[in-house]
Length: 198
Image 1: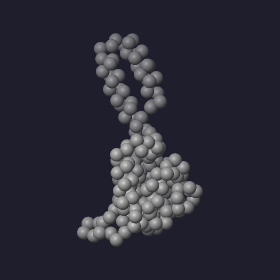
Image 2: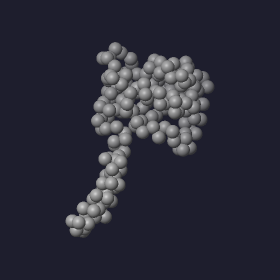
Image 3: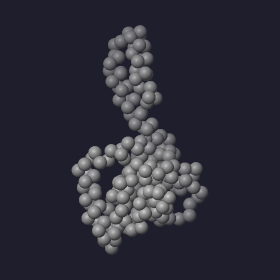
Image 4: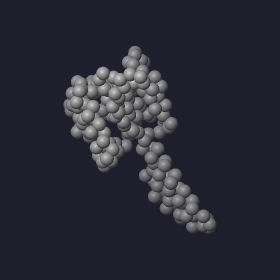
């Protein structure tokens, strides 16, 4: 969860190329606002509806295991105030470097980036990545507070731990009442089964 503020001079960038205020352990946040063109409001609503009705359209995004989540939202107003120009709000948490994150989005989700940001002013297209990175950097906000529940764990580590926990519960139920020799054989087999997640 990130709470954002406007751009301000922060400390030096981290080794991953990220403002240190956007980092909590292994987790990095990114928050981007871009102004939407006059036709962007109905277009984005159609894109969001399609994404909601066709969960299979998230396939490529879901396969990027370093991404905790990514969300696009159309902001048309603030409490008590309607915005003259809607804003496309993008937020995401991920593991790894900022540059590599944008590279992955650009190369793997090329069409998806244009579906979302193509309705925003100044969008340069995702490829080549240089202008797209500049665009994202120019529209990015710095977090004033960023919290990660498991800051030292990557998404892959958390998913592996959940898998081991589930399989360990099944192992525990399956091995109740075994004698020591049977349990030792079952334990060795279990370790071989879950080796990829350890």
